[in-house]
Image (tube, rainbow, N blue to C red; front, side):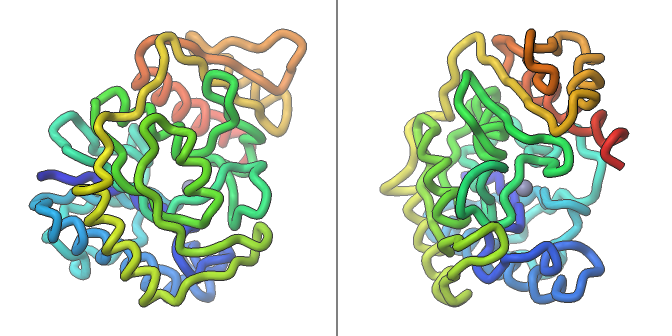
Length: 276
Ligand SMILES: [Zn+2]
């Protein structure tokens, strides 16, 4: 059994501030230790459930937060920047299950620590088929394309609630309760790791989802940016259309979920030219 793990960072127990999760920042070494502990707990739980092969995609910011020699399960590690499939780089139909580890709530969600949807300086809101979504549902498009079930998600309680909107919903392990965007009450890391260990085991056995996430065809992705010029720039891409009467919003629709995701990633990267 082959498991794909996309690791973010904001949803790890004890993490409440960018200062803990950005390379070179004051508390970064603490943060990466907490992330690694939860990741290894997930791998250990999955191994007990029969998983034999792991590919970990380090998906946060610099995308080199994980120390390769400390990974359990002889996991392969995808690391470094400029990956065309970004948080889902490396996934294909050869995998049996996906884990989303250390994920966080969408920008706009209340009581969601470090909430954002890819780029907090560009994306004000993302919607799939009219429903407000965060990174979980956007990344689920890739899972749907390759037909791989999302078995486990970990993060704060808002992240788990947002993941419930997926059909079928992954097994969720909440490791903290957010109080505001920069405060949370977390489980002790030892307890968080125990819960994730058990959760990973359950996600591949008793709670295993029957199918990959389901989306209708066609599916529509709408993005509302912070400013109109970002939306205008996004509409340079083929197939991306401005939305009448909403100068900050663009739309992309199609039957191919991978195309939708790739177009989304390109919009994120393209609009960075204005943000930075
Ligand atoms: Zn993220």
